[in-house]
Image (spheres, rainbow, N blue to C red):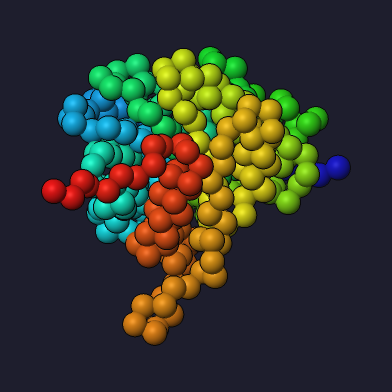
Length: 326
């Protein structure tokens, strides 16, 4: 057998060393990117929680009814100019319908939030509010298919920990769900996405929303958060009202149905905006939703109209009064 000479051995070792160096460099890059994303998400969480702490705004004693709208970007008003989100338009419509009583609608929407984040944010608001809202309108749960931050389905120490800890825990549940594959998919996504892209739920979906097992998992998660929120609201003397998305989100719709059946929570159904998804303005059809499925300013106006009508018609707020004629 031929013996490899020293020069030949060195030639073989060099490609191996280069390969090991490249793999090590790649690993360091992935770790660095994950660390930057983790820090960014934590700083964002700190800023949001800081805003939460100051959210107990002063409300005039002349205001008869206070409504708190909680949820994700559909409540916040993404894809609409400032002041044309559905809570702002709801306040305007209520005050136009009732010139005697005053209405204040508070928008506590948070882009990208899942149902657990909305629950926790609402609990913090109720703890600090000088005046408890009379009605809390909940519209959230879509982002549960990709965002596990503060998730009530995770142990508290895991939910408050790093993304890596959340991934490890979820991967351990792979007997029930496909979290092993999900974990790899999510890490790859984090490594190539900016924070703004991570917040885009349409492009960040990591659960298979066509898988019945995962639909059941998401339904139970949203339902669990709603039961606790309903208990917190009742404890403060507020009424929890559920607001559907305009489009069909199976796990959210299923959780809402379960809440109406088991807890008697009223549901305001705005599927398809109550009508076809266009509106005639000067005989020209106008779309009510943006291409990314968020409502636009016209869609938010329709939602506000349907919510105001349901609140009055179903006795969730006192009947509108007209000013007395002198």
